[in-house]
Length: 183
Image 1 (cartoon, rainbow, N blue to C red):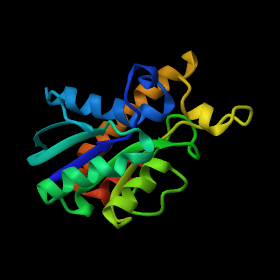
Image 2: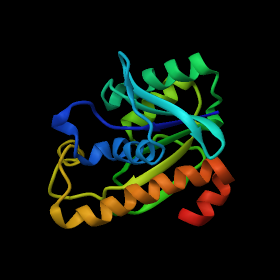
Image 3: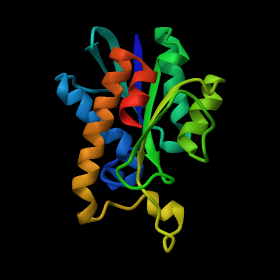
């Protein structure tokens, strides 16, 4: 059993922002399997058979800094092990559109990842990071909540598709093979 978490912020105000690229990747995955999200108090969730494994797709609706609360609720209810959790999120330290998979690690300053680490009590979950780059002239808090520039949209669309492919590779073939293929 797998849990795939896409990080972002709820509401139309944030829908197309850099911080919501995790939601975009999960929407891509759910669409491929014709799965429909159900709204709960703190999250949106859907589940089905993905690559032969029961898989939950989760979008926390608690805002980024409290994402761990929804992750903990779903893992506890379904007995999902940390090594079977994949979190898809934005990464300021990767150039726009670049993908990187990690099997575990620190939060790297990402508040959503930090929240998940705190709520699970472990760093041992898989991350699929999608680069959103940086702009040295815009404060980080503003930049992550800004929309992608028009010229970035084709590479972001490609990165979302690639991130979805990477998640499926992890589920089917394992994180090591996915890292060799996508990093």
